[in-house]
Image (cartoon, rainbow, N blue to C red; front, side):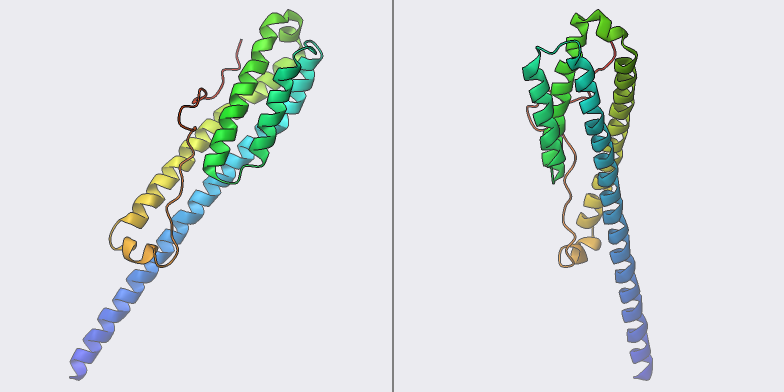
Length: 186
């Protein structure tokens, strides 16, 4: 009888250790997704911070394009207020479209296209767009890994009761005209 009790104790300890490992693995994956989301937010903020300088540079040459400037400001404001990946993706799409229209204005102003400050801002924006694309890809890969982990056995048995919920991908809204980063090269 004593031998059976010891075996049962070893089996229970192994199950507890396995459960702890599963839980810790899910915590690590959840934190990885949160970090990747933070990286996207940092890049979106960097782009949003570049926008006022870009707008002011363009305003100096094309002050009559008031509607475009207002659209950029409104889209930037929505992005700053986004709380979820879906809200951020929608606001990001709106800002990308508004920036695309803003940069298209430069085509009509050769002096603007030659302006050193405009060229520098345009280059910084292009670099930021590339970093956003990489961050988005990394985030979505982390979400895929996390979501698959909480759905697989045996982790699925503890994930739900312990509060591990499915995470959203960072995707452009359905039907969005802007589903890729804007082209900022002329």
